[in-house]
Image (cartoon, rainbow, N blue to C red; front, side, top):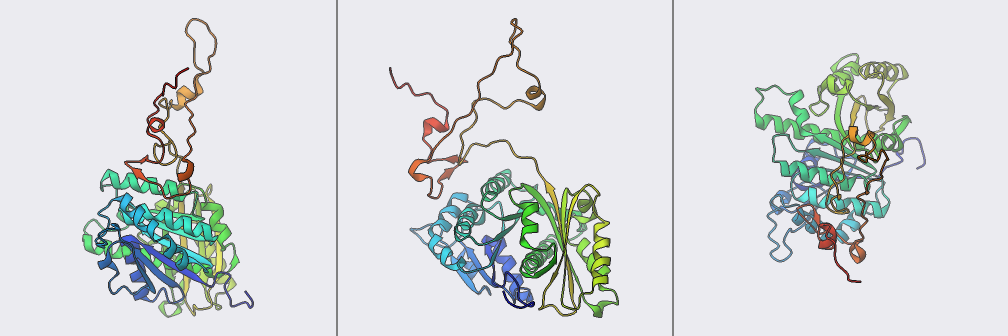
Length: 403
């Protein structure tokens, strides 16, 4: 782009998928936080799209025969099929953007089943993407958590940046006496502010360490749990707006408080402001924010200028907790292993051959499968089984082929 006032990612789309995603985009539009972005929503529940303020609403029917528009009922397969049928529409919608921010809540049917299709379309277009998704509460049904984890496994190789926010972080900041309706209303507002903040940071003209590559270096390909918080302040609220923005950032429900920040493995903190942002203000704010992080954490600090902001500053923090790689699971691309995996102690101890004193190499339970002509088509899954893989391979059955 030419000129200092232009952003390198000037054309940005915020896309909401499913009930949570539609709610976030609605709040973004109603609060005025999406004035500089294009917005779109996709849902299988037609009632959620009625009167929606998004620039584009795409109804995706979960039943291609009835076209009922009543949602997926938490059925991941129906959500996957619904968005797979809208692939051409999604491709036309997403083409031509410099950055796409996708937001959704995992665990249900529409987003959990359909996000892989959305990620695949974006990947095919070659557009930088950020997926900001929430994970179910611990007290919710185990199947919702399992579906959410499976969706994350599928998104990791497709998304440039994947931010996963546990809903349980709300408990760290809200009072036990807070009403449920008030808590969810606050969570929705905070999530909308977070989505808007992340989109604003990435489209801004970065002065120091605030570009897309910085986020990718910390997040791409990593399975992690993130706490995200934003805080804004204006000169009219006090002589020193930086400490006020920092305080509000720490109070963000989805950040998890100072304890979550101090225990993070890595953290990204970005200060955004207008052309009136001073060097002294930037230095003081970043020093205060960095003092809240553990010394061993990899800290990425950045500053960005948003020409549209006048007088206001925004502090955005992402506290990253990396997770160990999960055990290989049965499902879309692999069959269950032949043998149960050994414990770490067993792996460290050589196998003993009783009586011989020799070490014996055990059989490696590795089997490679090919989906053949179905490899490039939307996956058909039932209870975490890939139905395009032959049954005898999925169940590890030996077929007698004769001599």
